[in-house]
Image (tube, rainbow over all chains, first blue to last red; front, side, top):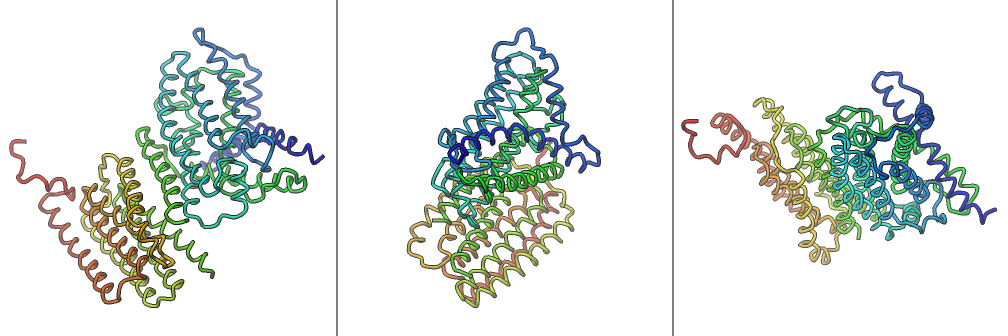
Length: 315
Length: 223
């Protein structure tokens, strides 16, 4: 049994991501609604939305090329793959050596690249505008993301996520570089997932939408897959943050008993993150698009300070 | 408490002082600027107190207390009253390029690290790693005085620079002699009062605290 456990765990991780992501987004929306004095739909609403979208016919524009049809599948697949790489329940899983954390960033970039292409592909004004904005933000967010991750890599002396998490799990306390990297990561995660100070996930207002503008032409199962992938991406970033900055409770690869415990701890931390996010979002106002560069500039500053303070203070 | 733990707390507090230095650089609103400055003073005072405890240097407790009184309570209070009297609470400074300023700030941190690292090798104090941060705080204050055009912001930059100097003294030699420190504290207090007088003078002459207007030598004719 123990020989199979790592493989079972790898599949279980990806399955967990697939199944729990809509719940997490539903929970975020519910808390947000409550904070805004609305009743809000239950946390299961995203499942119903996805089922509805899958049952509907997918309408594709006449002049859409294969990129437009191919993108939803690519984005969905790539996100599930990322779910198999990030250590959610246990470290040292068989897929861990496949990709390190830089490759993980590249995987997200691949998905974004294709969504931006699909936005341009159908040739509508909104799609192009959305793609242009998304790439503007991405070009600022990605260096900051890499710098934040490099800071964590410097502390742990590795870029393999599994080793990093195991190393941090052993005990890192009160490191300024770590605190800076965490702050930077939170800012970047907000930007990457199109959350409030950068993009509003709940709006289709012409002038402000970014992510929604790119996927405006999608419908039916294509839209379902892209939305589902978006939900998984939010959960993945939360999980990545948890794994890098608060990995307490994560299990080893061959330890069946502690996996159950790891699952409970992970679920509790995720719920905490999914409650903190809407509280944070409710307290912030959306930034004007031209101020986003400042927001991400701060993220870049924080992650650079994380690296610098590692060299200055922690040798 | 173990010296390693204390050193870690000192590192964390000094990192916060540096972060607040960057915050001062980027903040546009006058009141928020004042609050950031008060926080910087608070972390500085806490840092000094911990150094005093860790190194067993008595007179540093007094310095910490003085920092707390001067830079967290008294000077922010004086500036607060000035800002309210002059009704400039809502002033928002038009800053051209915040990300560029922040990047220059990062370059300054790297520079101070380079300058200070040979000195760090010779030091045996528990605060030796914060030397570079202290110099960087001075540099950031200087940069703030250069990039800002609002008089109050420039004064806060000046005071932040003094924060950095005090920090440098603490981390290089466990503080200056008591007489010097008392003198500096008094100077800073008098400076804050004189700045207040200047603010009023500048405003009655130029009807604004934007110092870029002082670059003009005569009044524009025919505009």
